[in-house]
Image 1 (cartoon, rainbow, N blue to C red):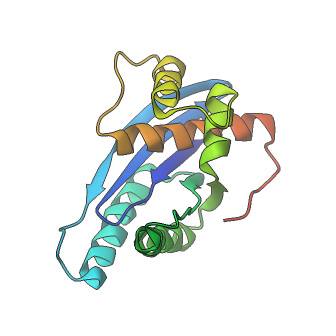
Image 2 (cartoon, rainbow, N blue to C red):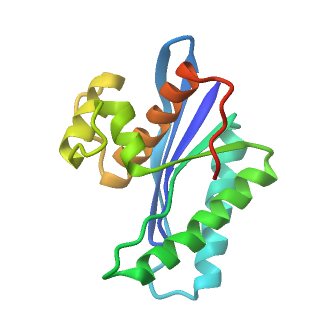
Image 3 (cartoon, rainbow, N blue to C red):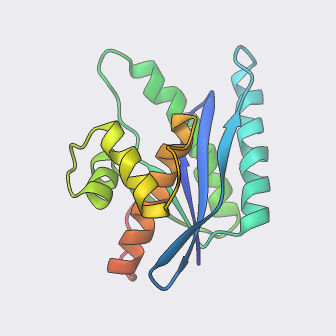
Length: 166
C-alpha cells in the first residue's frame, strides 16, 4: 500500500509517497510543488491541483495524510491561504477516490518521537532514522511531508480500520 504525506502550503507544498509492505516502509518519491508568488490565487490553486493530479496519477496512493490546519492568532491570513491549498489537495484526493486522513502536528510528533511537543530537529532525526536516510531531507517541507506519511503508516499498522476525520 502507498501513503502520500502532504505538508500543505500556498507557496510551497511538500509531498512524500511511501510504500508500506508489512512493517517495512520505503520512500517511493518525495519533493515539493511550488506556485508563482504574486500570481493570481486562482492560478496558484490550479497549479497545485495540476501538480497533485500528476503525483496521484503516478503513484495511486491508497491513503493521503495531510496536516490539519492550525492558526496563530498573529497570522490568521496564513491559515486561510493554507486552507485554500489544503482544500484543493483534499478535493484532488477525493477525485481519485483516495482515503484522506488528517493529523494534528502534535499527533505526527507523537507517532514519530513519542512526544507531541517534540521540536522540529527531533522529528527530522526520527524521519532520518525511520527511513535509514543519510541526511535530513531538504527543504523542510519534504521532511514534514515524510513525517506525516510515516505517522499515517504507523497509524495504519496500529489501527488499520480506524479512519480519522479530515
